[in-house]
View 1 (tube, rainbow, N blue to C red):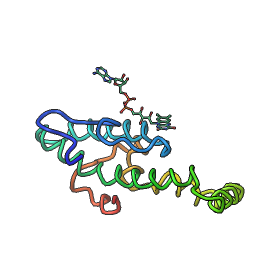
View 2: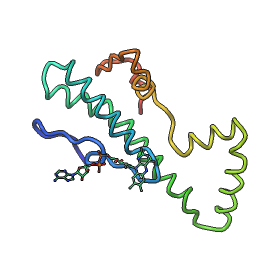
View 3: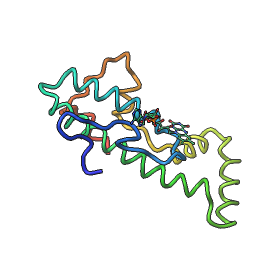
View 4: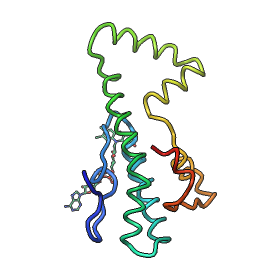
Length: 138
Ligand SMILES: Cc1cc2nc3c(=O)[nH]c(=O)nc-3n(C[C@H](O)[C@H](O)[C@H](O)COP(=O)(O)OP(=O)(O)OC[C@H]3O[C@@H](n4cnc5c(N)ncnc54)[C@H](O)[C@@H]3O)c2cc1C
């Protein structure tokens, strides 16, 4: 979708950026996107500015999760016996802490500094378009 908003209409959640259901993160992205949009609406000088900044901050995060979701689909539906065996072996190894973390990151994608900020709601994050922590959010 080239743009998530037109005039004063804006898309959120699955309507704007559905991920594969195998990604297991669509509801979280919808809620976090709504939080970010509300944050921008309280800070920006105009609704237009808020919508532009919301999309500029959130689109790279969503696109990374969409890419990960497509990869996860291949994991869930192995195309050959070899891939099936590899998956079984990987799931057994996932009980080990370090490998478990690797498997979790592979399936859900890496966390970004923007998501970390959203998680720490108690910190009252300043999510402005000039936020330097956005550099890692791609
Ligand atoms: C099988 C499956 C498993 C999933 N597992 C997970 C998971 O483990 N974790 C996770 O985070 N996400 C999961 N998801 C994804 C998650 O359910 C969605 O990403 C999330 O529900 C999207 O929320 P939303 O509010 O954007 O849209 P929706 O939940 O689709 O809400 C849209 C609402 O709008 C209503 N509506 C539609 N048209 C109109 C209209 N014209 N007028 C009024 N109301 C209307 C609909 O009835 C609906 O209630 C899964 C999805 C599926 C299908």
